[in-house]
Image 1 (tube, rainbow, N blue to C red):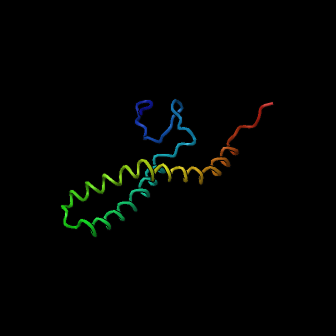
Image 2: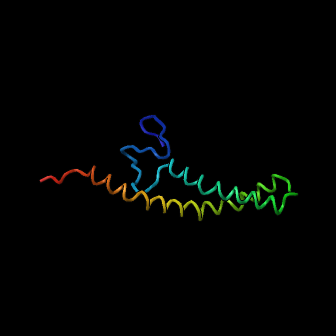
Length: 105
């Protein structure tokens, strides 16, 4: 996305394209993705070393990636983002109460 000749990051907002409040920032999504993938890769590598240690490393990486990526994308990351949103909701509500303009009379 670009605004006034300046490239914007995926989570930056401008007056023309505001990010909805319920969408996590790109930084939060990156941390959540890392938290989803790292444990799966660590466990997967451990299991694969015990079961298929004789396979070439590239084949082991291919099989592990074929399992970890869909599992992370379709199950782990959405689940973690839902939990993150539930944890952030009270903070978001407090913030919106403070920044809400007073009712004009």
